[in-house]
Length: 146
Image (cartoon, rainbow, N blue to C red):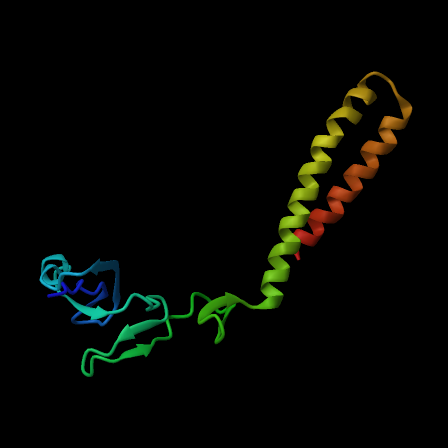
């Protein structure tokens, strides 16, 4: 008689009261170990393809349903394709511009150290370079305040 190899099974766990998925999964060929490895107050469900950030189990029906998590801030909008909240494009652009301005200010302040040394040594052109850098930094700081 041919021995049948037990089939591998993957299960996820959801909270019996909220339907929220637990981070843990279990892969086993022995169904008897599933109850032993089920977290307290959780129920096992076949599969590991669930998205705990945008899905949960309807505890009344046992069906997996989509869930819209709370909006993190008014600056976020729901992206139906990725099923995630994301920053609105104009907010992301504003944050990227701020980051770039801060990086440029840091670059200019480091670059100014050489011009300061040259200025201290009496090099005339160093003063002009310092003024130009200081003007650019002032302009960048104005853009940060906006």
